[in-house]
Image 1: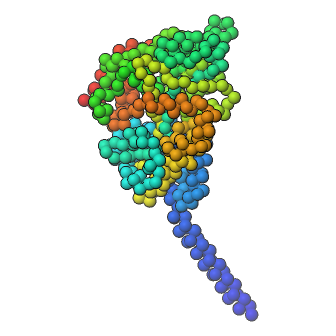
Image 2: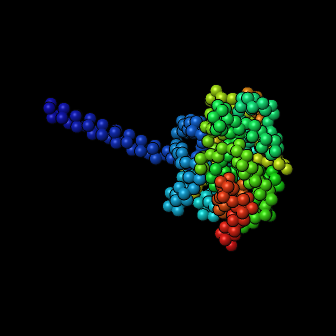
Image 3: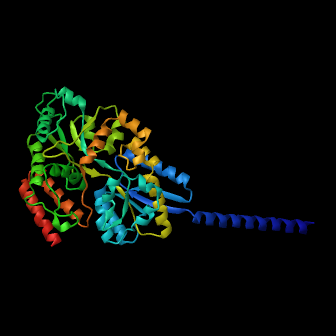
Length: 431
């Protein structure tokens, strides 16, 4: 009897081990079917990262076979060394959130896959704003898809305008200069300025260049000559539009009506929210943050010199060379980010302008625009928008332009001197 029980117990143990082993194997197979996708991004301000993460989590819950890991890797100027190191080390992310100016550089490095065929077979293709295709295309192929779009205007505090006796927002450069002076005030009579009219970005990084270029375009200036696809065709020296734009920013500082940001922190909104400044150049990505406060705010278009202008911004998603499975999974997630559902949620909660036409026309978004008229300023201003070049070498041009702007803002050079030095630097690089 004991022998029989011993044999029965052994059979049960063996059976249990067999079942456990089968379950382990089955679970391993199932785990092997999950494709992990990594997304690098620099979404800012921090509340917008929470919005993105919530949407990523929703995708992961509804796509158990694809799991996207969303990683904040710093602002775009901080990302560049990481991106290049990852490419050289053959360890890139699957997806990169970045502005389109990086396109030519990554294509030249052979880091990206073209997405023409995948997009051609995607139902979301017809829903993309057609004006954004110029940011996706380089050398006859599509290398990215739009994640969100934006442009820059002037955020301001209506209560501070009212306190200074200003009843209308400025439309021209001269009007803007006068309003900035009126808004610059010593509020407690101690002989020191407590409130500045304007906040300008200090630094040679891309945010400074992005917010300065519309002033050059408004003055009739161009960054490159010809078709705009040749880095060697950059024109800074004797560029009258660029000279006028630099001089305008310098005038605002010489008037004593402008506070400069900390180096490379021109996108921060604390000085405007606290009332230390009354006006700031920024974009709709801040609308969610401003809405979350009890502080009054408004937006008006960039002031005009010769013609209205703004910078078309926003980030695209780039697809790195990995494996076929991961590339397909990454595109599946990208389709989700371009969908009406994702774009509407991103717009309502973070303030980005939708790239999806159905999203813009949806009742939810139209109701949102009615409740938040500041959005309409950016939507209307978009028709005057210009995109930055996407050819290889743009980063060198941007750096040189940024150096010129920084030099003039700090009073180290005149506009002509700064632009001449930048032109000479670029001529040496590209020659």
